[in-house]
Amino acid sequence: PPAIRIDNLVKEYASPGPGEPPKLALKGVSFDVPQGGVFGLLGPNGAGKSTLINILAGLVRKTSGSAEIWGFDIDDNPRNAKRSIGIVPQEIVFDPFFTPFEVLENQGGFYGIGKKDRRSKDLLAAVHLSDKRDAYARTLSGGMKRRLLIAKAMVHSPPILVLDEPTAGVDVELRRQLWELVQELNSEGVTVVLTTHYLEEAEQLCDRIAIINHGELIANKPTKELVGMA
Ligand code: ADP
Ligand code: ADP
Image 1: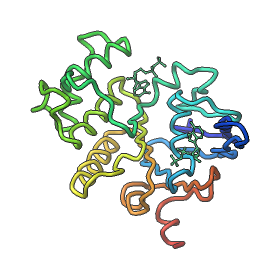
Image 2 (image 1 turned 90 degrees about the vertical axis):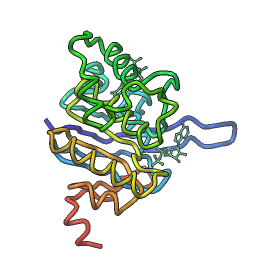
Image 3 (image 1 turned 135 degrees about the vertical axis):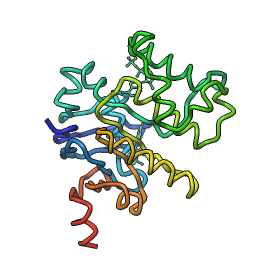
Image 4 (image 1 turned 90 degrees about the horizontal axis):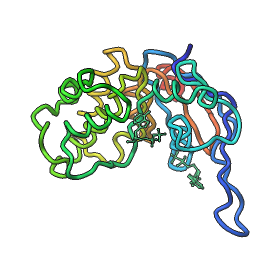
């Protein structure tokens, strides 16, 4: 199957208050994410990118249409769908008094992975945080926290990693580090999906780009073709 298949996905948020219309955040979006690549979902703020990611993560309920992750329908087979994807959220949310090692061990426990089968040490090495294994999360730099979030999303060894605006508000040096990490993970076989509003980021990192605007898909092409058009 494709890594992700989105078919005619619609999301209408309820009216925020009396006299205000409901918000149609996704207006029937369809596309496939092929296995093995780095897929960019590009669009301006408010386009519907986070809504789409949150539907895949099981955090937002779709209004209609369907979504499959690794062949598992998110409604018919939510458990397998969820296990096939690791989500790196935009906001950094850790207990400040946990260490990176503990964050990963706890997440392993959450997924029911036995102590002996957890990969916390390997994951810390993969995101270049081995030397921070026992530091309190609150003492980590912003970049370290972002790398820890990526490791946390990989605890259950999902074949797909989804990053929501991984470099929003990040300086040039850290952006470069995160790009390298994404490429390393992809070269190890992980299908990567990322949302961004930076065209340059999508061009540099992604082999395929879908553009979403006002809840509608307006392009979905190999990066080379898309850039050739501009
Ligand atoms: P993006 O991630 O591309 O910036 P979002 O998916 O966050 O876009 O938002 C798409 C549209 O849906 C925006 O108009 C936004 O204001 C609206 N929206 C997002 N979340 C909610 C919500 N919980 N309730 C109502 N409207 C929302
Ligand atoms: P559940 O739906 O089983 O209640 P939650 O959505 O409450 O699970 O998530 C619990 C914890 O697991 C949180 O730390 C959340 O960030 C994390 N989590 C859940 N699903 C994923 C996923 N697919 N990738 C990464 N982390 C996840």
